[in-house]
Picture (cartoon, helix red, strand yellow):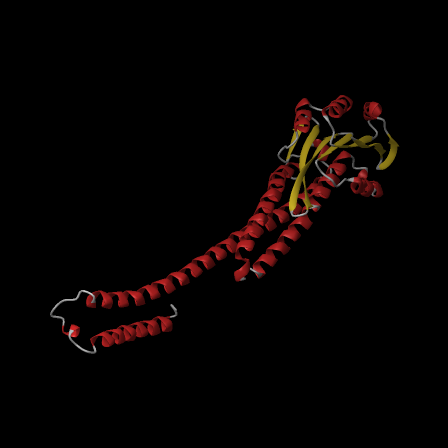
Length: 321
């Protein structure tokens, strides 16, 4: 679906453009065209390819979707894939923005994303001194908007992790905490799959040899790179903290199991003594003197009780009972 198709000259809106007239404006050379699509299908992308002269491989990737974040160079044009990540309830929904950039055009195709980029266009139009830098600034503005939307998700993940850490020693919430930790780990991995490849790819747009279309905007892409680096570092910290929390939980389970085993071992030792005495006196040998004693039976019971009481007291003092 076509959202906007506008021509800009010297950083200011020149005119709304019909799709069929895009190639005419591109041919002028004194302006650039910014087109925005949402969930563009193969037919729409084929029409855009015809108007913009886009490379076959970039169109193939855009039609197929579900691409890894990347930036590819085709002659004097770029094809960028950026992942959108949105919080819907307790789940993260991953979408995609495919961006085609040339010397005098920008084409973006937003897929599987509920949030639009109308604010990006409005911001760019309010800053004509920046927009006059051309398609490269639009590419920066779109990428910056996507990356900025990662920060609230990271903040929410850090807050959730703090809540889990506060309740990790709660005996009644152990199983729930483990489930929350694994859900949080899955979210961190989802966001990392969007951030890490883009962090590597965007290095092509600042420092060293950069594509000609981005030659004058390297500092802007360096800023996006810094934001991605911060997010990636935060995700590494979150993952390490989750791993530590899981290890703490497992250690607590092992400690609890050890306490149970000590109690069982202590009671088993007490009953083993009783069993030993009962086994000896239960053999009924003819010449065992205690068999003829009038007080042999109560004395045996008393001895057994005394030994068991002594063992119970020792285990109690040792903390086993």
